[in-house]
Length: 358
Image 1 (spheres, rainbow, N blue to C red):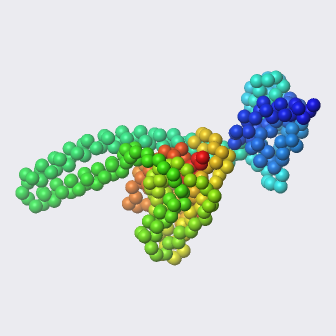
Image 2: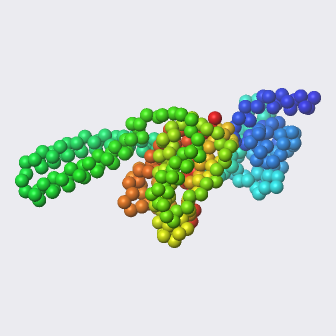
């Protein structure tokens, strides 16, 4: 009889297995009615073992959960959030954010747990998405506002050059024309990703990496080592191959330039690392599988002053840099429903590209 009731609960709550967050449905006495697959994986305990047991035993401080359940049952609140530590088999304690709420059915409570590090990452990704959208609008508006006056300035300088006879004055008009052309090139680069059509085809990420590797080694033929750590099981996926080459090239080119001192010392190293990520959330979406491409270098790291702004347009940590490479890379990856993250400390900078897989 108990087995039949458990099977019915599993069927009723089976949609929770589609979530990457950990979910437990408990009774008012704290016993587990259902545990989803993500919670099984995190705890290292089977669903059958968890069901019927006291869920408080899974926490470092069971009394906090007991107090929260009592508060929900006495209608002191509808939803409660707090931080706690989950016990895991043969692992360290896992810091989680716990959200406890009453279910629609009387006598049931839903407990959702999200690893703190995942919560921080999601918050950062949400900021990146908002930044990218704001950047896109800013770039489009600014570029169009600059474009028209630039044409007028260049045209006026050309007319003026035809009228003046002094060589010195002609040099001044040539400076105006040259600088107008330079700004026009910058504006075109700002608008480029929004103009270019999205050409979709089958993409092999390792072919993308090899293409980028050959380009970079042609520019930096000496004292730069590019290593490969590939997962050959990664399937092809639909995407714009040229956009992904450009996005990866921008990241790797930045890394190669940042490695100037290491190249001089003869130990500059960039590593391509590919993996399949499972049950991941990014861009506010859950994905069963995703491509993980890491570009890792042993350079000085991203300066602290710009760490939170490296994907902003015109922000560069290098003198003479345009600050467009990472902005364009993020734009191209986001057009593939993906995201680029950066983790940097002196001696190791890791850019991680995440893209959904079929």
